[in-house]
Image (cartoon, rainbow, N blue to C red):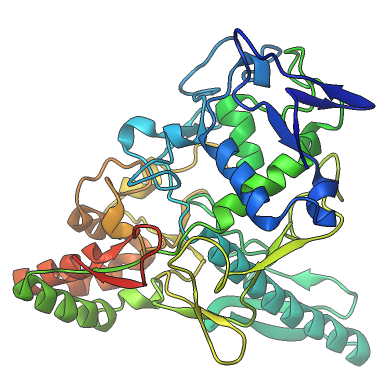
Amino acid sequence: MLTLCSIVVAGGLLLAQQIGDVPGISAHLNQADIESGRVSFQETVQHGERLFKAFFNKLDGHGRPATQTGMVRTTGPDAHTCIACHNHPRPGGNGDFSSNVFVNGESERMTVGLFGSGPIEALALEMTRELQAIRMVAINQAFLSFRNVPAHLMAKGIDFGDIVARFDGTVDTSGVRGVSPDLVIRPFHQNGAAVSLRQFTNEGMEQHMGLQAQEMVGIDIDADGDGIANELTVGDMTAISLYQAQLGTPGRVLPADPARRQAARIGEDLFGSIGCTDCHVPSMTLRSRMFQEANPFNPEWKIPFAVKKPIGFDMTVYGESPRLEPTADGGAIIRAYTDLKRHNLCDEMDRFFCNENEKTAKPNIPPNTFLTRKLWDIGSSPAFGHRGDLSTITEAIEHHAGEGRPSLTRYLNLSSYERAAIVEFLKMLRILPPGSPHVIDE
Protein backbone atom coordinates (compact mmCIF):
# COMPACT_ATOMS: atom_id res chain seq x y z
CA MET A 1 0.00 0.00 0.00
CA LEU A 2 0.98 3.63 -0.30
CA THR A 3 1.85 4.91 3.15
CA LEU A 4 1.54 8.59 3.97
CA CYS A 5 4.93 9.56 5.28
CA SER A 6 7.75 11.93 4.54
CA ILE A 7 10.37 9.19 4.63
CA VAL A 8 10.38 5.47 5.24
CA VAL A 9 12.56 4.43 8.16
CA ALA A 10 13.51 1.08 9.61
CA GLY A 11 11.10 -0.03 12.28
CA GLY A 12 8.33 2.46 11.61
CA LEU A 13 6.97 5.46 9.78
CA LEU A 14 7.68 9.13 10.14
CA LEU A 15 4.49 11.03 9.42
CA ALA A 16 4.61 14.02 7.11
CA GLN A 17 3.85 17.54 8.28
CA GLN A 18 0.30 18.59 7.50
CA ILE A 19 0.77 22.35 7.83
CA GLY A 20 3.56 24.72 6.86
CA ASP A 21 6.28 23.53 4.51
CA VAL A 22 5.68 19.99 3.32
CA PRO A 23 7.74 17.68 1.09
CA GLY A 24 6.96 17.44 -2.59
CA ILE A 25 6.18 13.77 -2.07
CA SER A 26 4.49 12.77 1.19
CA ALA A 27 4.05 9.09 0.28
CA HIS A 28 6.67 6.51 -0.60
CA LEU A 29 6.12 3.06 -1.99
CA ASN A 30 7.23 -0.25 -0.52
CA GLN A 31 8.69 -2.63 -3.10
CA ALA A 32 7.28 -5.65 -1.28
CA ASP A 33 3.76 -4.23 -1.69
CA ILE A 34 4.27 -3.99 -5.45
CA GLU A 35 5.65 -7.50 -5.75
CA SER A 36 2.89 -9.02 -3.61
CA GLY A 37 0.15 -7.32 -5.63
CA ARG A 38 -1.12 -5.27 -2.68
CA VAL A 39 -0.43 -2.27 -4.90
CA SER A 40 -1.79 -2.75 -8.41
CA PHE A 41 0.08 -1.99 -11.61
CA GLN A 42 -2.11 1.07 -12.19
CA GLU A 43 -1.55 2.37 -8.64
CA THR A 44 2.20 1.86 -9.09
CA VAL A 45 2.17 3.83 -12.35
CA GLN A 46 0.12 6.61 -10.75
CA HIS A 47 2.69 6.89 -7.97
CA GLY A 48 5.44 7.00 -10.59
CA GLU A 49 3.64 9.83 -12.35
CA ARG A 50 3.44 11.78 -9.08
CA LEU A 51 7.18 11.33 -8.60
CA PHE A 52 7.90 12.39 -12.19
CA LYS A 53 5.83 15.57 -11.83
CA ALA A 54 6.63 16.40 -8.19
CA PHE A 55 8.55 19.54 -7.26
CA PHE A 56 11.01 18.21 -4.70
CA ASN A 57 12.34 20.38 -1.89
CA LYS A 58 14.67 20.23 1.11
CA LEU A 59 12.20 18.14 3.08
CA ASP A 60 12.41 15.43 0.40
CA GLY A 61 16.20 15.49 0.58
CA HIS A 62 16.63 17.77 -2.44
CA GLY A 63 20.25 18.89 -2.80
CA ARG A 64 23.51 17.38 -1.57
CA PRO A 65 25.20 19.75 0.90
CA ALA A 66 28.05 17.34 1.61
CA THR A 67 29.34 17.68 -1.95
CA GLN A 68 27.70 20.79 -3.42
CA THR A 69 26.45 24.09 -2.06
CA GLY A 70 23.20 25.27 -3.60
CA MET A 71 22.04 24.60 -7.15
CA VAL A 72 24.54 24.92 -10.00
CA ARG A 73 23.51 24.71 -13.65
CA THR A 74 26.69 23.05 -14.85
CA THR A 75 27.17 20.42 -12.15
CA GLY A 76 23.77 20.11 -10.52
CA PRO A 77 21.59 19.92 -8.66
CA ASP A 78 19.95 21.97 -11.39
CA ALA A 79 16.24 21.19 -11.15
CA HIS A 80 13.42 20.56 -8.69
CA THR A 81 11.36 18.27 -10.92
CA CYS A 82 11.68 15.91 -13.89
CA ILE A 83 9.20 17.97 -15.89
CA ALA A 84 11.44 21.02 -15.67
CA CYS A 85 13.28 19.49 -18.64
CA HIS A 86 11.11 16.62 -19.93
CA ASN A 87 8.14 18.75 -20.93
CA HIS A 88 7.66 19.12 -24.68
CA PRO A 89 5.00 18.74 -26.00
CA ARG A 90 3.85 17.39 -22.61
CA PRO A 91 5.37 15.67 -19.54
CA GLY A 92 7.71 12.92 -20.66
CA GLY A 93 8.88 14.71 -23.79
CA ASN A 94 12.14 16.45 -24.57
CA GLY A 95 13.31 19.99 -23.87
CA ASP A 96 14.54 23.16 -25.50
CA PHE A 97 18.12 24.46 -25.44
CA SER A 98 17.40 26.36 -22.22
CA SER A 99 16.82 23.09 -20.36
CA ASN A 100 20.08 21.46 -21.47
CA VAL A 101 21.90 19.32 -18.95
CA PHE A 102 25.60 19.07 -18.25
CA VAL A 103 27.13 15.63 -17.89
CA ASN A 104 30.07 15.50 -15.47
CA GLY A 105 30.00 19.30 -15.50
CA GLU A 106 31.49 19.36 -19.00
CA SER A 107 29.45 17.76 -21.79
CA GLU A 108 26.28 19.68 -22.64
CA ARG A 109 23.25 17.69 -23.73
CA MET A 110 19.72 18.43 -24.92
CA THR A 111 17.03 16.70 -22.87
CA VAL A 112 15.82 13.57 -24.68
CA GLY A 113 12.19 12.50 -24.96
CA LEU A 114 10.97 9.42 -23.10
CA PHE A 115 7.89 8.42 -25.08
CA GLY A 116 8.23 4.83 -26.27
CA SER A 117 11.06 4.15 -23.81
CA GLY A 118 9.54 0.93 -22.50
CA PRO A 119 9.59 -0.70 -25.94
CA ILE A 120 13.11 0.64 -26.55
CA GLU A 121 14.43 -0.89 -23.32
CA ALA A 122 12.72 -4.20 -24.17
CA LEU A 123 14.26 -4.13 -27.66
CA ALA A 124 17.73 -3.44 -26.28
CA LEU A 125 17.33 -6.34 -23.84
CA GLU A 126 16.45 -8.79 -26.60
CA MET A 127 19.33 -7.57 -28.77
CA THR A 128 21.74 -7.94 -25.84
CA ARG A 129 20.62 -11.52 -25.30
CA GLU A 130 21.05 -12.31 -29.01
CA LEU A 131 24.60 -10.95 -29.05
CA GLN A 132 25.60 -12.67 -25.86
CA ALA A 133 24.12 -15.96 -27.08
CA ILE A 134 26.38 -15.78 -30.15
CA ARG A 135 29.36 -15.19 -27.86
CA MET A 136 28.45 -18.13 -25.64
CA VAL A 137 28.13 -20.50 -28.61
CA ALA A 138 31.57 -19.41 -29.84
CA ILE A 139 33.11 -19.84 -26.38
CA ASN A 140 31.70 -23.37 -26.09
CA GLN A 141 32.93 -24.31 -29.58
CA ALA A 142 36.40 -22.96 -28.81
CA PHE A 143 36.54 -24.94 -25.56
CA LEU A 144 35.39 -28.19 -27.15
CA SER A 145 37.60 -27.91 -30.25
CA PHE A 146 40.62 -26.42 -28.49
CA ARG A 147 40.97 -23.77 -31.21
CA ASN A 148 40.08 -20.14 -31.75
CA VAL A 149 36.53 -19.66 -33.08
CA PRO A 150 35.49 -16.45 -34.90
CA ALA A 151 31.87 -15.32 -34.72
CA HIS A 152 29.92 -12.57 -36.45
CA LEU A 153 27.65 -10.47 -34.24
CA MET A 154 24.14 -9.82 -35.54
CA ALA A 155 21.06 -8.82 -33.54
CA LYS A 156 17.69 -7.98 -35.11
CA GLY A 157 19.52 -7.76 -38.44
CA ILE A 158 22.01 -5.15 -37.13
CA ASP A 159 25.72 -5.83 -37.66
CA PHE A 160 27.88 -5.31 -34.56
CA GLY A 161 31.16 -6.63 -35.95
CA ASP A 162 33.10 -9.72 -34.93
CA ILE A 163 34.60 -11.53 -31.98
CA VAL A 164 37.09 -14.37 -31.67
CA ALA A 165 36.55 -16.85 -28.86
CA ARG A 166 39.90 -18.31 -27.80
CA PHE A 167 40.36 -21.85 -26.57
CA ASP A 168 41.66 -20.50 -23.22
CA GLY A 169 38.21 -19.02 -22.48
CA THR A 170 39.03 -15.38 -23.30
CA VAL A 171 37.36 -13.41 -26.08
CA ASP A 172 38.97 -10.96 -28.51
CA THR A 173 36.50 -8.05 -28.83
CA SER A 174 38.70 -5.75 -30.92
CA GLY A 175 36.38 -6.30 -33.90
CA VAL A 176 33.21 -5.30 -32.05
CA ARG A 177 31.50 -2.22 -33.51
CA GLY A 178 28.80 0.07 -32.12
CA VAL A 179 28.42 -1.60 -28.73
CA SER A 180 30.60 -2.01 -25.64
CA PRO A 181 32.82 -5.13 -25.36
CA ASP A 182 30.37 -6.70 -22.90
CA LEU A 183 27.81 -6.73 -25.76
CA VAL A 184 25.17 -5.00 -23.62
CA ILE A 185 23.02 -2.62 -25.68
CA ARG A 186 22.56 0.60 -23.71
CA PRO A 187 19.68 2.53 -25.30
CA PHE A 188 19.60 5.64 -23.08
CA HIS A 189 21.66 8.84 -23.14
CA GLN A 190 22.81 10.21 -26.46
CA ASN A 191 26.02 8.18 -26.37
CA GLY A 192 24.32 4.99 -25.16
CA ALA A 193 25.58 4.97 -21.56
CA ALA A 194 22.55 3.68 -19.61
CA VAL A 195 21.08 0.20 -19.92
CA SER A 196 17.64 0.94 -18.49
CA LEU A 197 15.12 3.56 -17.47
CA ARG A 198 15.92 2.64 -13.89
CA GLN A 199 19.63 3.42 -14.30
CA PHE A 200 18.82 6.57 -16.29
CA THR A 201 16.44 7.75 -13.54
CA ASN A 202 18.63 6.82 -10.57
CA GLU A 203 21.51 8.79 -12.05
CA GLY A 204 19.25 11.68 -13.10
CA MET A 205 17.69 12.01 -9.65
CA GLU A 206 21.16 12.17 -8.10
CA GLN A 207 22.68 14.60 -10.60
CA HIS A 208 19.79 16.94 -11.29
CA MET A 209 17.97 16.99 -7.94
CA GLY A 210 20.40 15.60 -5.40
CA LEU A 211 18.00 12.80 -4.46
CA GLN A 212 19.65 9.50 -3.55
CA ALA A 213 17.79 6.23 -3.98
CA GLN A 214 18.17 3.45 -1.41
CA GLU A 215 19.52 1.09 -4.05
CA MET A 216 22.28 3.58 -4.92
CA VAL A 217 23.50 4.46 -1.41
CA GLY A 218 21.96 1.88 0.93
CA ILE A 219 19.09 1.76 3.41
CA ASP A 220 19.10 4.36 6.22
CA ILE A 221 22.23 5.99 4.71
CA ASP A 222 22.43 9.80 4.50
CA ALA A 223 25.01 9.83 1.72
CA ASP A 224 24.81 13.55 0.95
CA GLY A 225 24.72 14.90 4.50
CA ASP A 226 21.37 16.66 4.29
CA GLY A 227 19.90 14.95 7.33
CA ILE A 228 17.53 12.74 5.30
CA ALA A 229 18.01 9.10 4.45
CA ASN A 230 15.88 6.85 2.22
CA GLU A 231 15.05 9.78 -0.06
CA LEU A 232 13.73 7.43 -2.76
CA THR A 233 12.72 3.90 -1.87
CA VAL A 234 13.19 0.84 -4.05
CA GLY A 235 9.44 0.92 -4.65
CA ASP A 236 9.64 4.57 -5.73
CA MET A 237 12.24 3.71 -8.35
CA THR A 238 10.15 0.81 -9.64
CA ALA A 239 7.12 3.10 -9.88
CA ILE A 240 8.81 5.95 -11.73
CA SER A 241 10.54 3.51 -14.09
CA LEU A 242 7.22 1.81 -14.91
CA TYR A 243 5.53 5.19 -15.42
CA GLN A 244 8.10 6.12 -18.04
CA ALA A 245 8.02 2.65 -19.58
CA GLN A 246 4.26 2.81 -20.16
CA LEU A 247 4.21 6.24 -21.83
CA GLY A 248 2.65 6.11 -25.29
CA THR A 249 4.64 5.24 -28.40
CA PRO A 250 5.09 7.98 -31.02
CA GLY A 251 3.26 7.68 -34.32
CA ARG A 252 2.36 9.71 -37.41
CA VAL A 253 0.39 12.86 -38.04
CA LEU A 254 -0.65 13.00 -41.71
CA PRO A 255 -0.59 16.51 -43.23
CA ALA A 256 -3.98 17.97 -44.05
CA ASP A 257 -2.68 19.68 -47.17
CA PRO A 258 -2.63 17.25 -50.14
CA ALA A 259 0.62 18.68 -51.53
CA ARG A 260 2.41 18.21 -48.21
CA ARG A 261 0.98 14.72 -47.80
CA GLN A 262 2.23 13.76 -51.25
CA ALA A 263 5.65 15.27 -50.48
CA ALA A 264 5.84 13.23 -47.27
CA ARG A 265 5.16 10.01 -49.21
CA ILE A 266 7.89 10.86 -51.68
CA GLY A 267 10.22 11.85 -48.83
CA GLU A 268 9.75 8.52 -47.09
CA ASP A 269 10.83 6.65 -50.22
CA LEU A 270 13.82 8.93 -50.70
CA PHE A 271 14.82 8.53 -47.04
CA GLY A 272 15.33 4.85 -47.72
CA SER A 273 16.86 5.15 -51.17
CA ILE A 274 19.73 7.42 -50.09
CA GLY A 275 20.71 5.08 -47.26
CA CYS A 276 19.31 6.84 -44.16
CA THR A 277 17.51 3.67 -43.15
CA ASP A 278 20.81 1.80 -42.91
CA CYS A 279 21.09 3.28 -39.41
CA HIS A 280 17.64 4.78 -38.85
CA VAL A 281 16.03 1.37 -39.28
CA PRO A 282 12.27 1.98 -39.73
CA SER A 283 11.09 -0.95 -37.63
CA MET A 284 12.21 -3.95 -35.61
CA THR A 285 10.18 -6.76 -34.10
CA LEU A 286 10.14 -7.89 -30.50
CA ARG A 287 9.80 -11.59 -29.84
CA SER A 288 8.01 -10.79 -26.58
CA ARG A 289 5.64 -7.89 -26.04
CA MET A 290 6.30 -7.94 -22.26
CA PHE A 291 8.21 -5.20 -20.47
CA GLN A 292 10.19 -6.37 -17.44
CA GLU A 293 11.21 -4.21 -14.49
CA ALA A 294 13.92 -4.45 -13.26
CA ASN A 295 16.31 -4.98 -16.16
CA PRO A 296 18.64 -7.94 -15.51
CA PHE A 297 21.60 -5.97 -16.92
CA ASN A 298 21.30 -3.05 -14.48
CA PRO A 299 24.53 -2.06 -12.72
CA GLU A 300 25.26 -3.62 -9.35
CA TRP A 301 24.15 -1.08 -6.78
CA LYS A 302 24.22 -1.08 -2.99
CA ILE A 303 21.11 -3.25 -2.98
CA PRO A 304 21.89 -5.47 -5.99
CA PHE A 305 18.72 -7.57 -5.64
CA ALA A 306 16.37 -4.81 -4.56
CA VAL A 307 13.68 -6.11 -6.93
CA LYS A 308 13.21 -9.75 -6.00
CA LYS A 309 10.25 -10.38 -8.31
CA PRO A 310 10.36 -8.63 -11.71
CA ILE A 311 7.23 -6.66 -12.59
CA GLY A 312 6.00 -7.11 -16.15
CA PHE A 313 3.24 -5.80 -18.37
CA ASP A 314 2.07 -6.39 -21.92
CA MET A 315 3.01 -3.29 -23.91
CA THR A 316 0.25 -3.95 -26.45
CA VAL A 317 -2.47 -4.05 -23.77
CA TYR A 318 -1.46 -1.86 -20.81
CA GLY A 319 -0.17 1.67 -20.51
CA GLU A 320 -0.87 4.88 -22.33
CA SER A 321 -1.97 4.58 -25.94
CA PRO A 322 -0.96 4.50 -28.67
CA ARG A 323 0.63 1.23 -27.61
CA LEU A 324 2.82 -1.16 -29.55
CA GLU A 325 1.33 -2.99 -32.50
CA PRO A 326 1.08 -6.73 -31.72
CA THR A 327 2.20 -9.46 -34.11
CA ALA A 328 0.38 -12.76 -34.58
CA ASP A 329 3.13 -14.77 -32.86
CA GLY A 330 3.09 -12.88 -29.56
CA GLY A 331 5.62 -10.21 -30.43
CA ALA A 332 5.27 -6.52 -31.27
CA ILE A 333 6.49 -4.02 -33.85
CA ILE A 334 8.66 -1.05 -32.85
CA ARG A 335 8.79 1.72 -35.47
CA ALA A 336 11.52 3.77 -33.82
CA TYR A 337 13.88 4.52 -36.76
CA THR A 338 17.06 3.46 -34.96
CA ASP A 339 19.50 0.56 -34.87
CA LEU A 340 20.46 1.18 -31.19
CA LYS A 341 24.08 1.22 -32.32
CA ARG A 342 26.79 3.81 -31.68
CA HIS A 343 28.25 5.60 -34.71
CA ASN A 344 31.00 8.16 -35.30
CA LEU A 345 29.31 11.17 -36.91
CA CYS A 346 32.30 13.44 -37.42
CA ASP A 347 35.29 13.71 -39.74
CA GLU A 348 37.84 16.30 -40.79
CA MET A 349 35.32 17.99 -43.10
CA ASP A 350 32.82 18.56 -40.28
CA ARG A 351 33.86 18.34 -36.64
CA PHE A 352 30.59 19.73 -35.26
CA PHE A 353 29.75 16.58 -33.31
CA CYS A 354 33.35 15.81 -32.29
CA ASN A 355 34.07 19.23 -30.86
CA GLU A 356 31.09 19.21 -28.53
CA ASN A 357 30.98 15.56 -27.52
CA GLU A 358 32.30 13.92 -24.36
CA LYS A 359 35.05 15.84 -22.60
CA THR A 360 35.52 12.94 -20.17
CA ALA A 361 35.54 9.54 -21.85
CA LYS A 362 33.25 6.90 -20.37
CA PRO A 363 34.47 3.31 -20.02
CA ASN A 364 34.23 1.39 -23.29
CA ILE A 365 32.40 4.23 -25.09
CA PRO A 366 34.50 6.00 -27.74
CA PRO A 367 34.14 9.75 -27.06
CA ASN A 368 33.20 10.64 -30.65
CA THR A 369 30.30 8.22 -30.99
CA PHE A 370 26.56 8.71 -30.67
CA LEU A 371 23.67 6.29 -30.39
CA THR A 372 21.52 6.47 -33.54
CA ARG A 373 18.76 8.93 -32.71
CA LYS A 374 15.27 7.47 -32.50
CA LEU A 375 13.35 9.44 -35.11
CA TRP A 376 9.82 8.36 -34.27
CA ASP A 377 9.28 11.60 -32.31
CA ILE A 378 11.46 14.00 -34.32
CA GLY A 379 8.47 15.99 -35.58
CA SER A 380 7.70 16.96 -31.97
CA SER A 381 11.21 18.13 -31.18
CA PRO A 382 11.70 21.85 -30.45
CA ALA A 383 15.37 21.69 -31.47
CA PHE A 384 17.91 19.28 -32.93
CA GLY A 385 21.43 17.97 -32.44
CA HIS A 386 22.91 16.56 -29.24
CA ARG A 387 23.06 20.08 -27.73
CA GLY A 388 19.75 21.29 -29.15
CA ASP A 389 21.53 24.18 -30.85
CA LEU A 390 20.28 23.31 -34.33
CA SER A 391 16.93 24.86 -35.16
CA THR A 392 15.86 22.84 -38.23
CA ILE A 393 15.79 19.22 -39.34
CA THR A 394 17.79 20.25 -42.40
CA GLU A 395 20.67 21.47 -40.21
CA ALA A 396 20.67 18.18 -38.32
CA ILE A 397 20.87 16.21 -41.59
CA GLU A 398 23.67 18.40 -42.92
CA HIS A 399 25.87 17.61 -39.90
CA HIS A 400 25.91 13.87 -40.59
CA ALA A 401 29.63 13.43 -41.23
CA GLY A 402 31.82 10.40 -40.53
CA GLU A 403 29.79 7.21 -40.96
CA GLY A 404 26.85 9.32 -42.08
CA ARG A 405 28.68 11.13 -44.87
CA PRO A 406 27.77 8.73 -47.74
CA SER A 407 24.06 9.28 -47.08
CA LEU A 408 24.62 13.00 -46.62
CA THR A 409 26.36 13.20 -49.99
CA ARG A 410 23.42 11.49 -51.67
CA TYR A 411 21.03 13.84 -49.84
CA LEU A 412 22.91 16.92 -51.05
CA ASN A 413 22.73 15.65 -54.63
CA LEU A 414 18.92 15.62 -54.52
CA SER A 415 16.82 18.46 -55.85
CA SER A 416 15.61 21.11 -53.41
CA TYR A 417 12.09 19.65 -53.63
CA GLU A 418 13.34 16.16 -52.81
CA ARG A 419 15.31 17.42 -49.81
CA ALA A 420 12.26 19.30 -48.58
CA ALA A 421 10.15 16.17 -49.09
CA ILE A 422 12.43 14.19 -46.76
CA VAL A 423 11.99 16.87 -44.12
CA GLU A 424 8.21 16.78 -44.66
CA PHE A 425 8.27 13.03 -44.06
CA LEU A 426 10.26 13.40 -40.82
CA LYS A 427 7.88 16.11 -39.59
CA MET A 428 5.07 13.52 -39.59
CA LEU A 429 6.82 11.42 -36.91
CA ARG A 430 5.46 12.79 -33.65
CA ILE A 431 4.37 12.28 -30.08
CA LEU A 432 0.62 11.82 -30.22
CA PRO A 433 -2.11 12.85 -27.77
CA PRO A 434 -2.97 10.16 -25.18
CA GLY A 435 -5.54 7.71 -26.48
CA SER A 436 -4.69 8.25 -30.15
CA PRO A 437 -4.35 5.50 -32.74
CA HIS A 438 -0.91 5.10 -34.31
CA VAL A 439 -1.74 7.36 -37.25
CA ILE A 440 -3.92 10.48 -37.07
CA ASP A 441 -4.84 13.29 -39.42
CA GLU A 442 -3.53 16.79 -38.83
